[in-house]
Length: 219
Image (cartoon, rainbow, N blue to C red):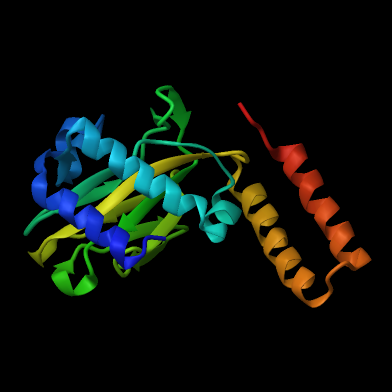
């Protein structure tokens, strides 16, 4: 999602900013298991971060195919130092959106800033159906997952893990319906490359649009 120059700009913001306890933004049971820090940026730096992230997402076709974003929350940076972790929890149903109003959290996103070599531990662990997947990506890479999934962040030992987090309200709130539309759209793209202008491409495009229209919402 972010190129090396954009990652460097975020790292510069991190270096000139201070961090506050992450528990300040936790609610309910999450507050009891949250041990990390979050950035306290100036208004100018906060705007810069939001513009940088939204511009990068805007050019990323795969993000839009998978998320079908309607609105997103204000991006923020968190930090896990030595011994810090976030126990198993569910994200809140609503967050403050970039528009200033509350948005429904259909999808959670973690955009990694620290390269894996900078820290040990710190994996994002996502649980579904008794299976747990550990995620630790390169700087600039993003993982997107349904906000209803139980997840956690393993303790960092040693080093420091920085990441940008935000939430997405999708045009299609149901995860299975959204995944179906996304997968069909991916097939459509591959088919269009091999059979440009074909009736098959036209008809599949109509199906994708009909399903999106049936299940989607714009406000």
